[in-house]
Image (cartoon, rainbow, N blue to C red; front, side, top):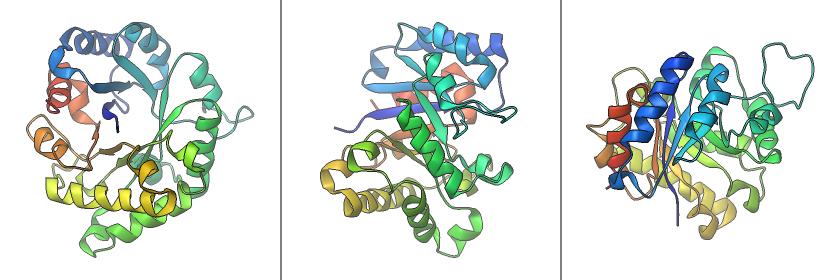
Length: 252
């Protein structure tokens, strides 16, 4: 059975004290209405160690927002998957659209990062999706197929089962636009079909696919009700405990 997951990507927001307060707010707000959902927070690097301590013993898990593909070396400013794993972090976001757009990440580096994360026992939250022009020209299926082929499908069936996929309609991130629940279901189903064609139905049905485009408390329930949507990678709405908890509760 696929896991239901709600992951909060804080991006470059929340200093240490603010982040710890947010984690406490999430922990204290979790009730029976949130059971059955894996809850993940992804603070900036400087807060990861303390975030792991703050989340210990609770239902909240911690993710890094990025990683470097090499184990060590002269890569000033970078953090390896081994370093992330050593402090108790369990997940790492890889291939986020902002990393692709602002930091020129490409399929080659994303593939290496996925390999490195799996080698260290981290769960990659692998992001893909199309920009506005690609959606408007009807190329969204072509784009995600290419990304999956180039960045994920080198993995074995056993390896790919350890990956969480997050579909990002890039045109809906921070723009106020949101894919309709029907649009979300359509492309999530397509991604699952790609997985089925490559690895078989059993593997495809074991992989959680999250929606990552302006998911909020007022639209989460309808989006999450769709057959192939297994949760969300949440941006702005993850920065307030009340909103984040409401999104988690949208599953019930």
